[in-house]
Length: 163
Image (cartoon, rainbow, N blue to C red):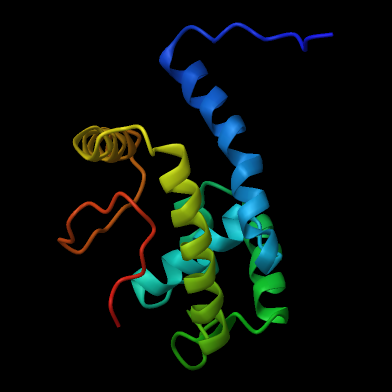
């Protein structure tokens, strides 16, 4: 018996949601080698790109509660992927940064995600991929989300920047 095929949703938001839920298990599968969730992986990437952030900054950036980000940070710290240091001595804030182990895990995850990305977008011309990334960045900005590319060109893959 053939499985039931659901109709494609109408509306842009519904299509984004549909694609997200289609991509999520594939991303989970690729990150399984590191025992990382997509948000843990993205936190590592944000810490590398920023040079260090507080848990509060990360929670705002990812749109999750401070408590949720605290759990994510605790798990990454337990695995020695991140460090926690006082931002200013005598103050409550902590700055999070990547450890050597965290940078290695991030690079491994980026290679796995790059393979996935190449599979998913293999039939899409490079110009269309670039246009898609530009449109997504515009939408990201329109939603008021934080994004600092430091003047870097738009990257269509999760390739690690040269260190």
